[in-house]
Amino acid sequence: MFIVKLIKRIIKWIVVAFFASTILSVVVLKFVPVYFTPLMFIRVAQQLKAGKTVRMHHHWVPLTEISPSLPTAVMASEDANFLSHHGFDYKAIEQAAKHNKTSKRKHGASTISQQTAKNVFLWPGRSWVRKGFEVYFTALIEMMWSKQRIMEVYLNSIEMGDGIYGADAVAEYHFHTTAKELTRPQCALIAVSLPNPIKFDSSNPSPYMYRRQSKILHEMKFVKSLPKEGEDK
Image (cartoon, rainbow, N blue to C red; front, side):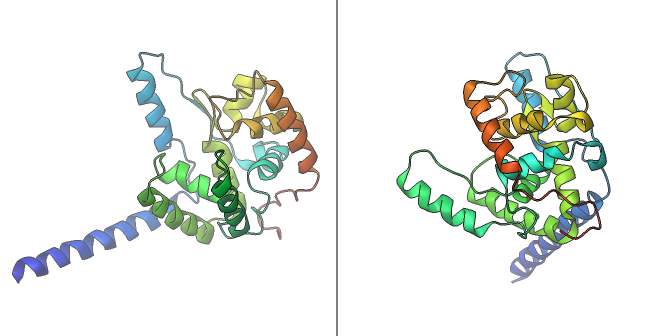
């Protein structure tokens, strides 16, 4: 009986510690720049294991120092309903589920909020356990962060090339400029690369990438720009 009570008590404190630590981390990162993510460390480990030179380029810049065309481009490419949903695009999930039933080429329906939660707090993978944590962290950041903060963290932390993370690093190493000076076509090319930035190199676009770039540039005309912090969506 004593052992059962002890186990229950331990489980209780583990649960309390989990919720307290995760909520605290989300609150802290609402204000503090995200300088490292789990994926960055995983990529470094993979490079070392393969005997390659370590490449990790990442410069945090505030959203005001990023071209406004880049949020528009990633919304047009990745999450057209970013400004209106609360972390999950149920219509996109339904459409992806219908498509995946009949096609070998699977479509995802992860929102920018979900990708941000995954990049900052979790590890890559497709297990149900990881997906459950992704849902949890997505709900947390949607409750505690503004859409502008979610976009700022997303554009600073996402992988955008081989050893390249974030808008300012990809602007420097692929386009020889700064995140603020990125043009609309360059932003569209970056958006094209996001599903697989190792395969799709925005500094050396393939014919397929140019076709996708044209489509994204067209769709950007119909996507509402990200409002400034404090403005109505």
